[in-house]
Image (cartoon, rainbow over all chains, first blue to last red):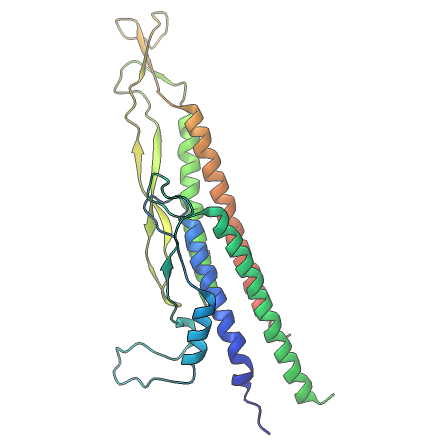
Amino acid sequence: MAISIDKVMQYHETALMLRSKRSEVLASNIANANTPGYKAKDFDFNKALKLATSQQSSNIQKTHADHYSSSGSSDIPVDMQFITPFQAGTGDGNSVDLPSQQTAFAQNAMEYQMSMRFLNGKIKGLMTAIKGE
Amino acid sequence: MSLYNIFGIAGSALSANSVMLNTTASNMANSSSVSSSTGETYQAKHPVFETLYKSSRMTGTALPGVQVKDIVSAQAEPIKKHSPEHPMADEDGYIYMANINVVEEMANMIAASRAYQTNLQVANTAKQLLQKTLTLGQ
């Protein structure tokens, strides 16, 4: 019986990476809340997680040095989209709705901690198995 | 790790908003300053923000922060006041007062201070998440 540690962790690791990516996106929106002409961006977490977990098994071979690397979970591809603003025009072309971005950021931070809790549980489970206590 | 980039993004917003607070403070401090000619009169200064794109070493391209593109002077006509006894009055007895809309400046100040607080909160949350990540598996 072999347990692949990679397989045990991978799902939550990908989720954690995507959560941290999303928090960066939201932080960027919040930072640009007063920038004229800035358009708020976001991505669908569920779709991104599905995409990332389905692509993990197919590791594309690099045949040229300039090719983008498919390994390394820090550059998970996400489908970035502009947010449709609640309010049509604010006068300066900015489409950031600060309260919704703040709440989304807070929720995303909670979900990051949730993913971390799951990961911690996996690690604890493995440790118990290793120690056999 | 994208969380590291948040410090750069929120940090850029902190400095941009502190520039806005600085200009607001300067405008309000000079709201009753007086000069002897229209050219010398203080003009309100307002920063213009722009999106700051830069690539990061950690994850390739980071998401944009914000920076102050320029600080523009308002082109408001100075308030001309007849006050011959004033030491700075010109030969016709007029002084020129800075035309500053204090209500607008107060609104800008609150906007900048709220934005500063929000971005500080963002950086703080990112810090807490990173700290918790460091203790993963312990």
